[in-house]
Image (tube, rainbow over all chains, first blue to last red):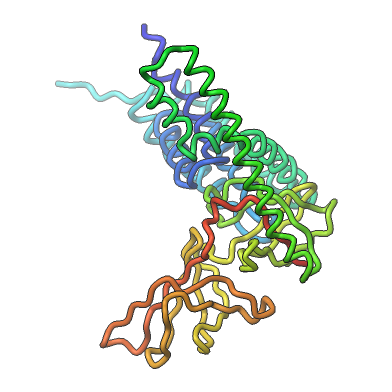
Length: 88
Length: 262
């Protein structure tokens, strides 16, 4: 079995997602969230969304909605039936 | 006849429980952060500022092209010369960074003479935030308050302090997408709408003569300029002309900003 299995890319994507939240344009962490959620039941996708909001959102819940966290939760949970149907 | 089958959900239960636990945890952390006045945000931003500051030399070397140029030009030379040249260039890049910082701080001095405020370093990327914000290295320990006006060294208003935490503060750029600001362009009072990336646009009546380079003034910020006219578009069928506004400084090149106490 190749060491570069589909599961070995998961931590790499997670690291790119966190680093992207810090340094890259905002679409990159969102793309990583979507890609992770498509293939995995990715807890780290929610963490990336949460990290992005903690980093960039001005004020707390009272000022604005944490859009990246909400989007990550919706995407991870929304893709759950798809993962169950097609992936192991 | 083919048999239909379905995947058993039995094995997925534990994974879904974990996912549910993380979801609840994250929501709980969001509530905790809000109630605690931003303890988590403060920690995350301090970490981010440290990463950003400590990687400044590396980013400068990469973005200024020095690294790639060095690789290309020294490909045919021997290893010893490569190392020696790399060391000189690294020192030169470091000198350039210090020189630019020095020049920016020097130009900030005239602001300090005219206005009461402080100079603060930009400690994050200015293009990574989905909310049009960036971080500065001044917080509750410094006399920075929410609503303080943030100026460039050219005295242009670049944003407002919106979140003061610990040693960092978040600044919302004035030209963040969707942010509206009442401005005066060529004597006409209009509303500028931010497009992100240091750009905005406004609709000005066609009767008003607007030239590229005209200053865009915001009365609510003491009559300071928030940008200049970059381009004017008008259609014969429209009563308005669209004026595109830009900040005359590249946001990504900002190293220091001046915080004007409100």
